[in-house]
Length: 66
Image (tube, rainbow, N blue to C red; front, side, top):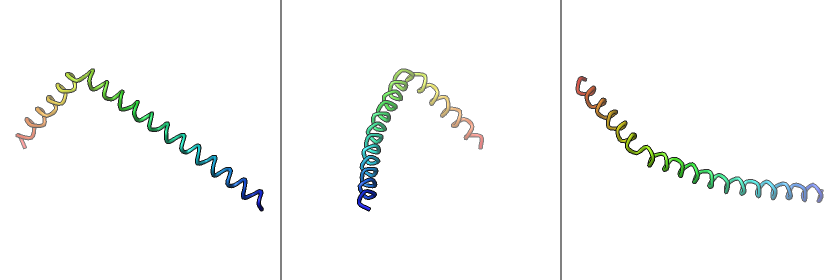
């Protein structure tokens, strides 16, 4: 019985360490994704502003007809 308990404790500790390692990795992944998104926004800033203005102009002109 003692051997089963020790094996269970070992597996729980190993699982806990693996989960902590994966959590740290996901934080790094999220930061990298945010950096890429911010870089894309900065690179295509004028095109994005133009697109948003065009969309809002179309919404405004078509909502006037309702």
